[in-house]
Length: 274
Ligand SMILES: [Fe+2]
Ligand SMILES: [Fe+2]
Image 1 (cartoon, rainbow, N blue to C red):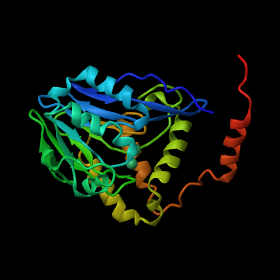
Image 2 (cartoon, helix red, strand yellow):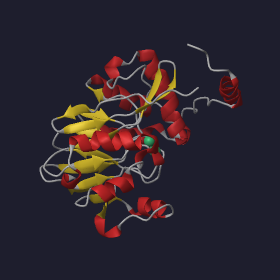
Image 3 (cartoon, rainbow, N blue to C red):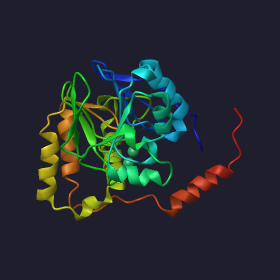
């Protein structure tokens, strides 16, 4: 069964900082976020560029908030398809923007379409770039599904972009963790974060705990993520703790052939008449 793409609005995370929200519906009462972010400061920064399926919507959402000519930075967290949907449109439409990427992203994306080297800077976790009225620090998120991944901390507002970490389903078009029933949040959090990073099963809990501590030590005020609701207050520490506890634990069970067969059976059902 396919569902229409829900219409969603940007969410203000901090002054001049917006979560650009999109979603896909996976089933009744089950939505997956596909977010990116815009920091509309002195030197506006686009943070990831959405998924190809939302490309037109995403371009409208972002360029309703900022004039393309004003965009100075495009931060690319990693080269996964759901984060680069409008990347080349943005590079074409924003002639004053510099792309913040890294060596391996550049190499991996070159196989599809080369990136403009003279318009780039390369940054790795622990490094920074300055966007006028704020410094943006790159961090290695606790959970990630691509080797090029770097998250971002806005040192001015305390907003952290956690990329693919802290994914969780939401029951409808809602964007804050406190609006998600705890059973749906906890079950989908465990499943999605394990799906994204199956390597958690081999982690030493003490060494991994040091990494989690080092990210949480930045004390983000707001944590925004590509595939889950926005975290504030105690929900931030809870999320760090939930991934901390994944070290050395078995991966969650994956949907298997029987699920594919159910999906195929659904496809064969005649459309119900209204
Ligand atoms: Fe990813
Ligand atoms: Fe992603």
